[in-house]
Length: 437
Image (cartoon, rainbow, N blue to C red; front, top):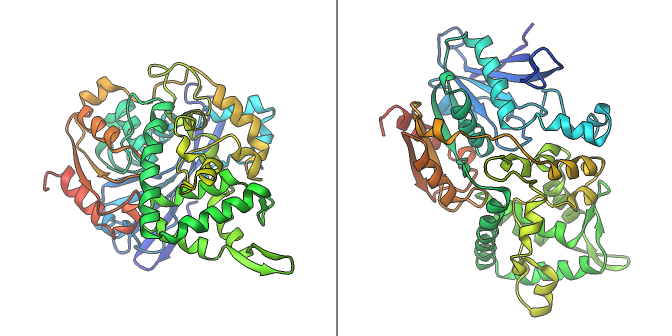
């Protein structure tokens, strides 16, 4: 029996679905996928169109609503919203360091996780659509970031189930390999570093001082993880959000405390760093990150820790070199490196599994360029001009490749524009897919 909860302005209903682990073997092993239905209070018995929300990630559960908060406030004017915990996340059958050993060896775990990419997520959604709306029912899509990647996969594999689609910050390069993605990413991250240091010039010396300290001896984080120099640089992931530069600066402000042995990194700083660096809440983000770019027709080889390999082409990200030549130490961005599976306790047990996924070849294609070129579904996309996470050039090239896709390009928001815009992004996209803007 579904659980129904009322919050101010909304009615929430739980849904739990049994889906095949491998949709190619529909009668085989089943896993659970959870979704939360959200409808405006007073409209719960109305025949409203459905909107499926596809969360960013990979490995991110859907947000937990607190009434009509954020973009939901605008969406609930028109839709009955379904927040999907993509397979392996949230209340769906979890895939973590605690559960994956039940699958058996690292090889068996890797084979299991190979079924957790966008193609499987879309097939889960199609099964759910048919159960909720019937065979002929259609719903709208809203994909944020990786959810936008999944939206492109949806339009490639099952456009017949989609009435209209909206994407925010998530138009993937249809023909971009993992190496292509990171080769374009490092210069974007360098620009974010430059902007941060221009805003907070005092952070140049503050960062160098911390790096000098960590180069002598990594610090232990409260959860038992290690804060090494590369791990400290990975705090640059924060620079991709609207308030990330400010939050990073405030974190650096609390770096030092004078203890009995002299100056040392403060517990407040180490706790804040851990909150940013730990993958305990979303391990699949790290484990599957590079596999989301694997496509046999683009690059039949393995992704092979592409971010680590490509990094050597950008020596300006070498922290020790920066210390030696007096230049600012650059933070990295949305990159996953093999050393993370040593420094993060939530990832250590998955180290061998992640290595096997990095070595895996012949990933099935996720996008069908011919189907997208013939697309008949109204599609609108918000492209953030200064997006650190998704390349603007790739986004615009993909927009040109999807028939009928309309964009609005803006630098008013960073990658988290959907969350912080108060529904303005959603309102603009709704009007665009309806031909009203």
